[in-house]
Every structure is written in C-alpha cells, then in structure tokens.
Amino acid sequence: MNAPFKSPTAGTRDAFSAYVCDDDTLDLLLPVANELGWPAEKCYKGGLRNAIQQLSVAASPNILLVDLSESGDPLNDINALAEVCEPGTVVIAMGQVNDVRLYRDLLASGIHDYILKPFGSEQIRETLVNAQAFFSAPRHAADDDEARLHLLTAVIGTRGGVGASTIATSLAWMISEGLKRPTALLDLDVHFGTGALALDLEPGRGLTDAIDNPSRIDGLFIERAMVRANENLALLSAEAPIHQPIMTDGSAFHLLQEELRNAFDVTVLDLPRHMLVQYPHLVHDVGVTVVVTELTLAAARDLIRIKSFLKQNAPDTRLVVVANKVVSGTGEIGRKDFEETIEGPIDFLIAYDPKMISQAAKLGRAYGDIVRGTKSGQPLDRLVQHIVAASEDIENAPKAKGKSSLLGKFDLKAMLSKSTAKN
Image 1: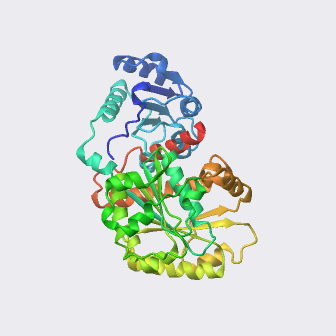
Image 2: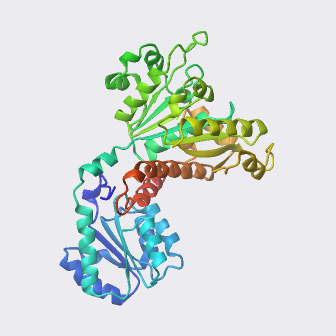
Image 3: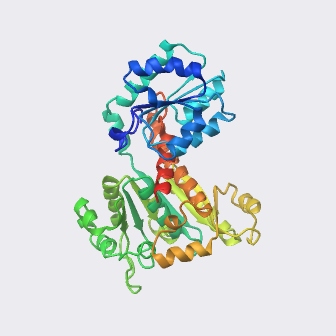
C-alpha cells in the first residue's frame, strides 16, 4: 500500500522524534521542529544506536528522523531499527555516504527518504513537511482493496509424520497472533486431522456438515461452524468416524475457500497429500505452497512428484520447501544430495526439538507459540515473513505502480518482534 499503515495506537504516539550525531545538525533541526510544532526535547543526541535502544522500550513516533553518520553498516542497522519500530512509522534517514546503491537499498528496506549531510534548513523543512503529509494522507479506495487482499497458503507433507500439520498450525497461530491478521485454519484431514488437538479445541461438526450439505455454506455458516482459538484465529476441522468415507465431488471445498476468503485475511490449508489426487482444484488459487519434507529417499521421490503436480495444477503458486525435524549428521540423505535429487533448494531447515514438541502437546498450544523467542522458533519466524512477503508480491505484481509497498518491511518485522517482546 502506498499510504502508511495507521496503527491503532497512532493517536497516542509522539508526532516526531529525531536522533542525530552532532551538534551542528541538532542546531539546524531545532528551529525547524519548533516551526512545525514539535517539542525540542524530542530531538536527541546519539544517532541510530540511541534510537534503537530507546524505541525498544517505548512506542515509536509517527515520524522518525535518524542519523546514520556513525553507522558502519547502515543497511544492517536499519533492519535492526525495523525490529523495534511500530507499524506505520515514517522513517527518514540522514547520512554522509553519497552512494546511489545505498540510497536505493535503504528505500527498498522500507524507509521513506534518505538525505545527504550537510543540508540546509530549507531542505530538512521540506523533507519533514513531505513526511507529515505522507503520514496524514487519506486512504484511497485502491488502498482499501489492497488491504483486503487474501493470503491463501497450503501446507503439504511429502510423507506421513514429517510434521506438516505442526507447521500449518504454527503458521496460522503466528500470523494471527504475531501479525494480528484474521486467520482461518482449514484442516482437510477429515478423519485424522490434528489441528484441533494441537490447539486444545473440540473440532465440532462444521467441516463434515459442509461436506454433507454444500448448499448450506455461506457467511453465517462459517461464523457458526468455526471454532475460535484466539481473537484472530478460527479453525474448521473434523474427526469423522473412520467407517464413514468422504462422499463429495469437492464442490464443498471450493465453496469453503470462497467464504473463508470473504471472512478472513488469511487462510492456511492443512492439506493431506492424498487430497491432491482426488481434488486437484484445491490448489488452483493457492498463493504459496509449503511442502514439508524429511531428508529421506522416499521423501525426495514424493517431493519431485508433488512439484510436478503443482506445475500442472497450480502453475502460479510460490513453492517453499521446508525440511523439518532435522537432526544434524543423522539424515538418510545430506542436504546437498537431497537438493541435487529434487533439482531445487531447501528453503528452510527446522531442527528437531523433542522437548519443545512434547511441551506443546502437553499444554495444548501451537508449536510456534511454545518456541517463540527461542532459537528453535527463528526458522518459523523467517518462514512466516517469507510467506507473507511472497503473497504480497504475487498480489501486487500485476498492478504495481511507482514505488512498491512503503514501510512493508518495518510493518512485518515490527509486528512480529513486538508480539514476541510482549509475550
């Protein structure tokens, strides 16, 4: 979106803060800030490092001016700033490095502007006025449409027991809790699904009712049939009797996807691989497909077959390969040999952590909830960021105009990090 995300707490945040490295810049900035109605005490000495330190324990302002003059690695430091910034903050950087590549990289990282030192009072005034107008700009209809774009991702296991359902449940929980986006988890293993079990919920009859009576599927049905896991996460699953096979042409699943698209920002499909054979249309509109695998010969064979299936039935989906339950030095196939076999990369490696897995099961909490803020949770954090970024790329690519989404990286990283810090 071209306008910044307006945080729910924007009204209680400071309008402006600045962190500069030298007295000359501070002396130049103070009268301009005063002219714009911003208090002088919000202009600090200390540059970017001081900004990161202070914003890690306090709300960030609407407009933030930071000095990179003392930074040895500006891009890395800006990314560190993104970890502590509130969503919607308009960030302006200043520095002494006159390099076009750095300028472009900084803008791509999510900042609003980069100005070169030394500068005059007119230049800094114009920059801050533009930032103020940018922050206050009204949302347009196109922005509202873009805000409603739906993220549909499917999680498929190459073999039983690789942990695909654990990954699916974790992704849904992390997106709903960390990014505060209304999320639906659709567990399509009608007889043996574990989504409800992992979240300590009763599955209900919603999914089986939908399969038996597709004509009943509408917004009201979705509202009544889904089980709430938290404020932003709802689950639709089943534990159908084993002696009752699925009797459907698949139309119910299509209707469910359509209604979930209308009711939620995000849908995570926990999709058993056998469902692909019977209902290939399930993946037609999937933006990102996460294939979870183990490092075995059988898994490599089935991953190749799933990739071929997706090329035919979901040619536009973004494929993400996740090796799960990895134990260093004990795999049947090494990573390099596995990647050569499947003719593609493993995008994420998630280590086997039996202690955390056991704790999640005992407490009835998502694995992603249990490992948040730990080393074991870092690959899952990166996977969430990758999925959301890839989905937004897919949605925005056909209608990209001018600049790409400003502050997108700041929104995503800040929301994840703030959620982890609060919990």
